[in-house]
Each structure stands twice: as C-alpha cells, then as structure tokens.
Amino acid sequence: MKKFLLYFAAPVLLLGGLFLLNSNSFSPIPPDVEEVAAEATFVGSDACKGCHSSKYDDWVASGHPYKFTIIENGEAPVFPPEAVNFQDQYMDSLGDGSHTWDNIGGIIGGYGWKARFVGTDGHIVGTAGSAFSTGLGHNQMNFFGGEDHGWVDYHPADEKIYNYGCFKCHTTGGETEGTWLEGVDGLGTFTEGGIGCEGCHGPGSEHIGGPSSDNIDRVYEFAHADNSIGGLERYGEVQTPDPDGDDVNFLCGTCHNRGYTNKIDASSGFVKHHEQWDEMASMKHMESGLTCLTCHNPHKRVIWDGEGITKTCGECHNEQVATVNHGGGATCLDCHMPFAAKSGTARGASGFKGDIRSHLLKITPNTESMFVEDGSAVRDDDTRAASLSPAYACLGCHNDDAEDGIPDKTLEAAAAGSVGMHSTTRVATSVSGLGLGIYPNPSTGPTRISVDLPSSSQVNMSIYTASGQIVYAEWGKTYAQGNLEIYWDGKSTAGEEVKAGYYFVKVTAGSLTSVDKLVLVK
Image (tube, rainbow, N blue to C red):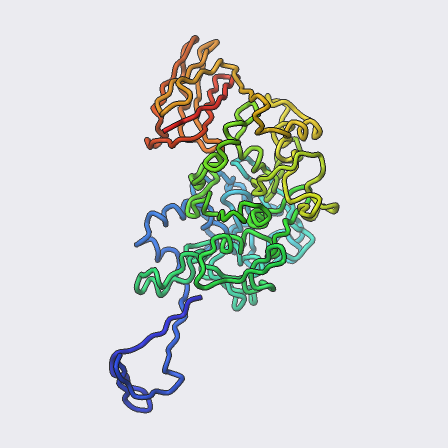
C-alpha cells in the first residue's frame, strides 16, 4: 500500500508555537509531526467511473462485481440480464423453502456458475451452524451456461461462517478486523462487495484527490492478511508483493489459486475451481513471459458470450492451427482448454466434463490418470508433468451425448487418436454434410461460401477463430432448396476488418452441418 508525505508551505500553528515551513528554510519541529504519513484508503468503484467511464462500463458488465452481493432491506439482488441464473426460484427452493430475503445477509456468486446464501447470522444457509435450515443442505444452486443444473447440498454437516477467510477473494479491501455484518462479531470487514476497481488497482483515495499515474497502482500486488507464506510459491521459490511492481500474474494469482503454491488441487475427478494460476504456473507459457493479460482483457467478461479474450491461439501457434487433424471443426479450446475443472456441476454423460475450462493446455497422449493416486491434486513429477489426459481433452465431447452426432470413443482410442494431431503426415478431415465450398481460400477478406440445401431450410452461418471466438455470424435466414451462396465481406459482425489468420466456417441447416477451414491473408 502506497504512503505519501504531506508538506505544508504555509505558517502552521502548533501547540508549542508558530513554525514557518517552506521549501527553503523552516524552524525545527517535533519529530512526531515532522512527517505526516497519509495512508491511502479505499473509496469504491463508483468513484472511478467519472474519469474511466469506458473501463467502468466494461467492468460493471463483467462477473467481478457479483462475486459477493450484500442484501439490504430484504430486497432481492439484481444481476445483469445475460446472467441466466434462475433467481426466481431461490427463496422458494433454498433449504426447506421457508426463507425470505429478510433472512439473507448476502449472496455469494449468482452470476456465472452457482449461488450460495449467507444468512443474517453470518453462516451459510443450510450448514450445521446456520439458524436457517440447519444442516439441511439444498443450499447451492448451479446454473452454468444458463441451464438449470439444480440444487445440491453444500457442506450440510459442517459449520461454514462467511468471514475473512472466505470473502477475501470475493470482495475488495478485505480486513481481518471488525465485522461486515451488523450484529455478528468477528467476521472481518471489506469496503466493497465483489471485486471492484481497487481490487486490482489498490486504494484510490489519493488518486481521486489528484489523479496521477504516481498515486495509483497499475497492478496492485498484495498478499492476503492470512497468507502464511506472504506471497506465491512456485516450485519452491516464494515471490512476495512488490509495491513498485506490475506483475499481473501475481495479482491474478493471489485469488485464482488455493494455498498460494502451484500444487493444482483436485477433488472428485476434477480440478477444483480457483486453480487457474496454479495451472499456468506449471506451464512453459509463464516461463516464456505470458501473462493473464496476454489473452484476457481484465475489464471484460468471457462467459455469456463476452469479449474478454483478446488473443487467439493461432497468433502464436500458426503451424499447429494450420495442421489440425481433427474433423468437425474442433477448436483449440475444445481440446487444450476442456472443462476439466468444476465449480458447481459436472455436465454430460462422459464423467469428464465440468464447468470451468482448464488452463493446463498441454495434453499427455496416454491412458494414465492426470491425478495423483488419492485424487487430491494433478500429477506433476518426473514421470508426468502437469498436463491434461485425453479423458478430458477428448471424451468430454466424444462421450458426452449419444444423440449429439459425435462418435463415442474409448479412452484407449482417444489416446491413440491424439498422437500426431498436428502432424503433417496425417490428413485432416472436415464435416461436409452440406457440401461446403469456400472461395477463394486463402482469401484476402471478401469470400463466397456455398452449400447445397437438400430442402428449404433455416440456415445459420458463423465464422470463428481457432480458439472458438465468433467473429461473424448470420442466423435464422430461410433459403429455398438448391445451391446457396453467401457473400462475406471479410468484416466482423461489428463491421471491423478481421485480421489475418486461420478461421473455421460453420454452416448449419436443419440437422446437417458443414465445417471447414478458411485462411485469411492480408
């Protein structure tokens, strides 16, 4: 936390007499008032929007502000419209169904994955110590992807108090002293529910008083008050906060980890949530200088079709993208960032698909488990570096749903098929149920896309990056039977020029789909 010295170039009346202070000469003054140190304090995100309106608007439309929402006057929380979270059933279904918002002090989450509820007694509703639905469970609602995944029992037999140890990563300006909830002592305090601007840029009181790049942090490196090692440990080396540093990975890693070391914690066959830093810290990407900002705009969301991803895999790995020996237009993310982690729920029939994308990226193409023997962590030793198993990289799709048209595979077949996936000795296949044609290809921008419609159909067309980010889409137009040609001008849906790289064109008509690769050269 930055501290600033205040000097006065004017007569100052002190109890001991009159002292004149200026830049040239001054009378001696008592040591206790010679330097007046002012510690910057938190002022809240609303204080930032006047000067930083664009970034503020992006931030308020992301998930960070909704990590924890205080409930006031018994009024239900309000979430952005894109967050399909089934809020209308919260109070009817929570615990024994007898509770109202008057019983709730705050809601954890509710935006992207799940929702838990803190009672006005400071306990998680439905847990052993709660005054509401004591030990009953039925206290966590899962809704990732806008699907009703239902209620689960979150630690009904345990006492779960929402204190600093929990909210330090859900709020801004957390302190171990005091209490955030009236009438409940010893919980600790915070200045803002959710992750606000100052959660990443530090206390802003001095900056608000006189905006300057010298009195606010671009990257607020800090350590939690209960962090026993004082920083982040990566393979035995502990990095501590640098007040003058701008280490983005340190800042993001302060919350996107468990235990402040790069051991990747796991449970019940999935990587736990809040492990993104641990995964990245085990990869060569971090050694190569990549940061969270390399791929993410921290002010924008990724979920709910957000625009938070700023870099595609093909910008660095163009050879691999050019040689993808996989049919069906699978993206880099489908294989290298599968849903191998779980926050709220496992999905599909495979048993290998959670609700958080892995940041491990590397795939080891064999049938061995990616976890240690007791399943508590990802293996990371001399015999197997931290990496994904084909169970998650492949079977999350190939065994997900018998009706999805994707062929099911055994683990053995998946492991064998993943060998040489980017080798030029194999021939890539594409899905061509509609006889997809792309001309010219490579293209400098303007491109004609043709398909053969066996009957009058509603047609959807999308063009997306190798990372799965849609750059252009046409939806819901109906065309007559026969040959259809769609002209694309090489611009995004927003009207911006699409930069050079490798893309996929996907056209769907009824039950038929065609996918093929498009190369843009500029």
